[in-house]
Image (tube, rainbow, N blue to C red; front, side, top):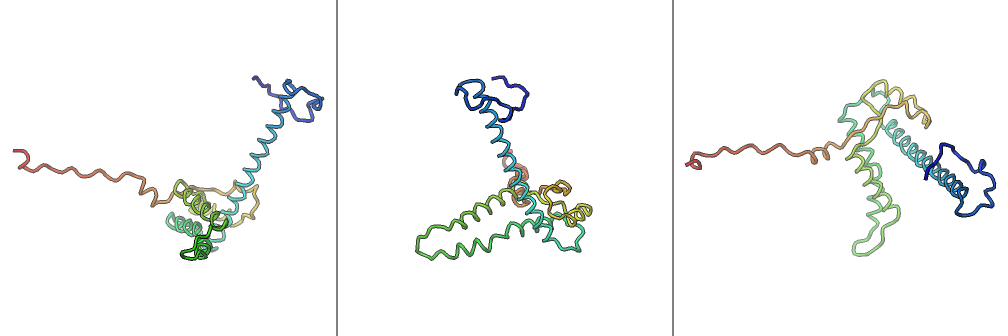
Length: 186
């Protein structure tokens, strides 16, 4: 099917009430409806992503003391660990509600927290995005940020991987060669 470059809208299509289901006009209307749905879905995903990123940035902004100008990589990793542990207390209290020996289904909140914690841990293993606290200029911009979603792109973000996960995934050094003894050569 060849499509042209025109972006039709429902308003521009005439006589859309009386069309044959398999006509070209019906296909045109279907394309308009599908495009509208696709654009709405993308906008919804983009908005949700912006809210979660802004929430994360605000958490990190309030977690770093005002007198700190920059952070080292180790301090940033410690801050990420603190961020990842923010729901652990609530999760453990929900797990503690289970009585030993009694089969009780998990609470919906418990399942949601477990999935959320696992997702964030996986994100940290593959690359966790956070504001760059190693740049003093970026820290100043972050402190001045008022929470506006439109000014998110002013804040420089970096991606850090979990060092323990990276250490597990890198192959270890090759084993040293064992020299043959003189008895073996005979």
